[in-house]
Image (cartoon, rainbow, N blue to C red):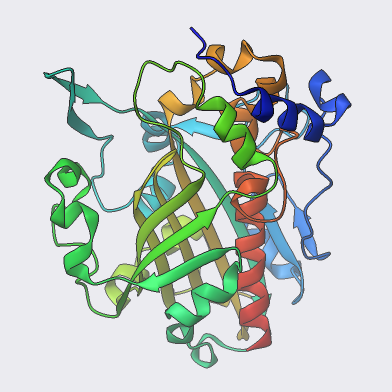
Length: 352
């Protein structure tokens, strides 16, 4: 059942919504990305031999002409089975399982199992210098992460202030082997992204819907993460993931372990190896995995009841297929955000 809608809010959204968008047409122009990004069906080891410096191979498993709005998303349980090496490397920690936790509503506590769907993007590029000349530690800093996406604000976070550590209700997000942010060579971060374009207005209107919960959709995404260099032992096994037959020289990862809404976890991973055809060059493979709460994707009927909101369906917005998508960061959708993050990292390494 709908709550009474603010007339001012509704009129404002209608006035800012392009007419064609109400017919399901996405009007957002393509996001600005590096001209040398080449979309491929998959990253293959053989491609390294012909890959030139300055070109980035990119894939995210999406079917480009698919009518399936969830194209590019895979159920977490299926991910473990069908792409085990990828899941092992890009999950928050070894042995990660979908969360189980308690929810109390009207004084009644129930156990809840949360299912997840994962979006994964991969990039690969060659740098004309050997791995020994690439210092990954310069990218494991707050300053560097802040330059990757100017729309996201970051600040240092004390390990004691990590939400899963201090909040008993978030205990399900703890690592079982060690506390978050307490490993060697780790930077602990708290980050915030304010939704851009028409999305904040759309969120205000969506919050007028009776969703059966007192929890509202926020107009921002806040998350906590740890950024760290992988130890030689941890990095060594990543050759199974890249499928490139040279020793892994180093690895860098940023693991998002706590998010205020929509997502449950995320990971950025970069793996450096000597190029098989030229040890004087390095091949760098990058990954970004983002796990979406499945119940977010299921919120369709509530939005579909309001014609002006039919393009605010969560799966459309998340996958960049809505007229509400805008910019080059998270508001543009996960595919654009991932592509730009991987491209920005490749550009930074090439310049340095």
